[in-house]
Image (cartoon, rainbow, N blue to C red; front, side, top):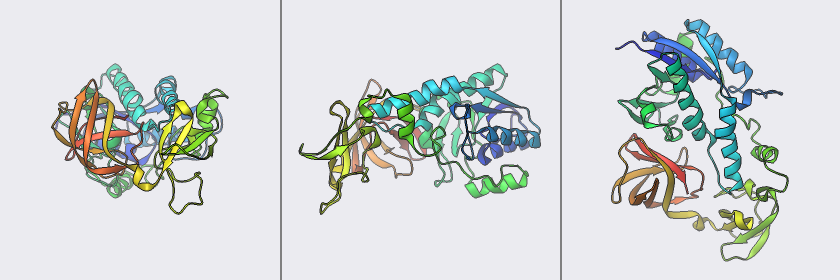
Length: 353
């Protein structure tokens, strides 16, 4: 094995801690880096496993334990611009974004690589459950933890310089490794929430960033698919495709959000059968392998944890791909990610249009 100089993103969680320790054990020259993002700003910080000042301290403790230097990278301005601003803009458009994808695509990997180059590193590494092998991206071996869905936006040239030491491990194996290395993060709880929305109240984030009279937070009609009025909402940004709560009741069959029309400030509802889609259009496609062409086959995953659906490429041009689905997809939500696979390999992905 060739010894490499590697810059490792260390969030202060168990996964990135073990990734760094494994690389040291393998004989690489390792440098640890924790990214100071939006959520490290001034003000009280809720108790959470990552994205706090405590997590910087945890990352540094792990670095001391395994004998590597540790730096803090101030990326707060980049994170606000590329992740938080996009999050707000997308909800204002009636869409449902995934900030983790934006963070991976613009902040974590691109900025991490720039710092790696400045430090003379050959590679960058993270604690993601995915595999980067011979310049290609693959699912992680642990399907329950696979995070390849969030990584489609990474530049193809960056994938060629990535190491993912946890790609062939399960989560229990990672915990065992942390205990073997006697890391301070070995028993640390996992983080599930959006880092800059630690309490889950994303509408409060929108209210802080949007003007008081923003249409996305103003009252508007709740309509049936036939155009009939069934109620009123207090902001379409509080709804997403497939949602059932906060809708008028008193009907024999439950209603679901099937569309959002921001130009009318309208939330459109229908029955469960109205959620099915036979096709999906994906825009802003980033290819990690050769672009697909009309007639090609692939599988598409339209949300994290969902099963990939076999599909046929109906059209592909100008960074947009339209797919015909072998089986209907439920609750396809604009703004979410559509990730294209062939088996375990990530071919590319984009934003559902």
